[in-house]
Image (cartoon, rainbow, N blue to C red; front, side, top):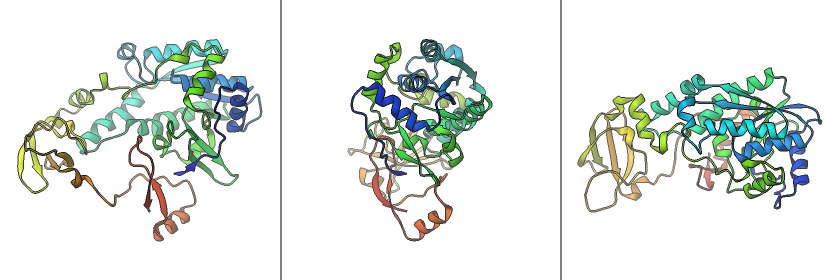
Amino acid sequence: MEQACPVPLILDADLDAAIAATRLAVGLPQGARVVAAMSGGVDSTVVAALLHQAGYEVIGVTLQLYDHGAALKKTGACCAGQDIHDARMAAEKIGMAHYVLDYESRFRDSVIEEFADSYLRGETPVPCIRCNQTVKFRDLLDVARDLGAEAMATGHYVERSDDGSVVSLRRAADASRDQSYFLFATTREQLDFLRFPLAGIPKPQVRHIAVQLGLKIATKPDSQDICFVPEGKYTTLIDKLRPQGREAGNIRHVDGRVLGRHEGITGYTIGQRRGLNIAVGEPLFVVRIDADSREIVVGPREALMTRALSLKETNWLGDEADLDAAAATEKPVLARVRSTRPPVPARL
């Protein structure tokens, strides 16, 4: 991941400055057609409004990602029933075209099923990454092109940098809102078409801009939890989709002792401490999940420590030769192992 972006941080709710920043981020002449991906939240709504204010022909697109009946009952989630309604009302207020696309089947196949399979493999998935990688950026970009758009803008807090030869992804100016972690899989081809107008605007200022523009969405809470997981209880969904994940097995200490039994590996994640239901007089954490043997391996906190890790699904936005050279010389890099943790020094 590139260093934090050089885009100036807009520290007040200056609407003119935000509109100018939007034109800079889009880099297209006024009047160009731009699709705004609208989730129904304040960020994507403000992006759509700023695009309109900046003089672009804006088409809003919202995805219905899972069962509409269930979505209507769930608030605070991306692309739920209320969010679709909010996006539609915002588009009407802004004065722009808006479409809702039924992507339920694609979302189920590309995101939900893979989410369940990951837990069966003893992994802890990040479904937002998979959703961005497939449904939102792969499939929706095709729709945007079919609509005759020259670019698609989203409400992500991340910067797209284009030096004329290489398009790269950089962290947002507001580190507390940076979402580059969730977009690591974005390809060069996708970045050529994507735009991120909020790269230099902190979240409080985004809400102030929404107020200035008369958008009712200004005070809407941010989305919480995983959008398709009822009340944040992912095990309920996994049990329904992959009941074989509830097969019992041993809880084994790193020293080899069997400390007890568990009721299925899908109920555990690496680093978990609570809910182990074993009493041994010392704090223990999940150190490893062996999907083949159905074993949960636990140990003291220090057993979680590691000095190296293996990468998969790598996405190098520069020249491939540079990647080989970087690996050969153990190039110093910054690594982020969780979305909520700051980057730490590492070597490739």
